[in-house]
Amino acid sequence: MPVYRDEAVVLRTHKLGEADRIITMLTRQHGKVRAVAKGVRRTASKFGARLEPFMVVDVQLYEGRSLDIVNQAESIGSYGAAITSDYGSYTAASAMVETADKLTESEGSLQQYLLLVGALRSLSRREHGSGATLDSYLLRSLSMAGWAPSFQDCARCGRPGPHSAFVVQVGGVVCDSCAAPGSPRLDPDTIALLAALLTGDWAHTAAAEPSTQARATGVVAAYTQWHLGRGLRSLEHVRP
Image 1 (cartoon, one colour):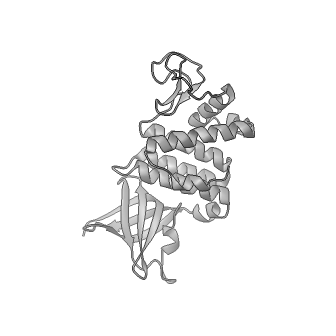
Image 2 (cartoon, rainbow, N blue to C red):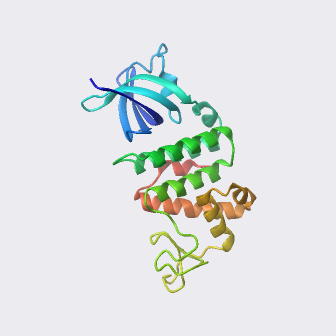
Image 3 (cartoon, rainbow, N blue to C red):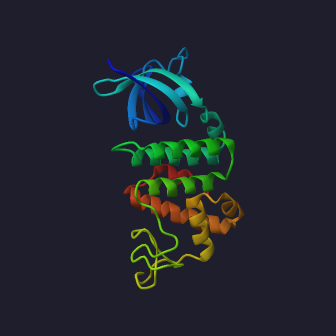
């Protein structure tokens, strides 16, 4: 059987039989891969702990007919323990890997892989608040998938901003001429924070008021749910 090697982030796992697991991974070069890890649920397994969600591994696989088979796995980023020890980080990471799973159903993306690895690393090191890290990740991953939001110019006609009406279905802020009656309005601080989350302006993000952060999180959640076309179950458990 052909053998290949790649770097991968473990997105999720499922039990298979008495001792095996199906591992869903986002790889650097081969997109999303589902593979069987044989015997990893046994205590004597050599690499079972390396194939848990949020781990980044160098993995060798055999190509199979329906599912590939994991032959070797070496840790590159052991982020799982640090993330799961903190509830906020754990729920944020769960939403991240669920999003990556949905966004890469048809094909992989190196940019999506690198973004997810960076976000998980940041969570494990507590570089920023878990909520802000998640919001930034969601906005960036959606942008890479072709749904970049506009927080300055009108998302419909392109009229220069700033604008205050925000329409999820259109893709961001819209001018008064394009805004439908009753369109929700965002205050300037929330719009500025959303723009900072999208560009990675962490100094601005850290200085935002809690109320502004909460409003921005609500906008990001609504934007994500709409463009993914289905709900993210993990978002229900994310700590406000």
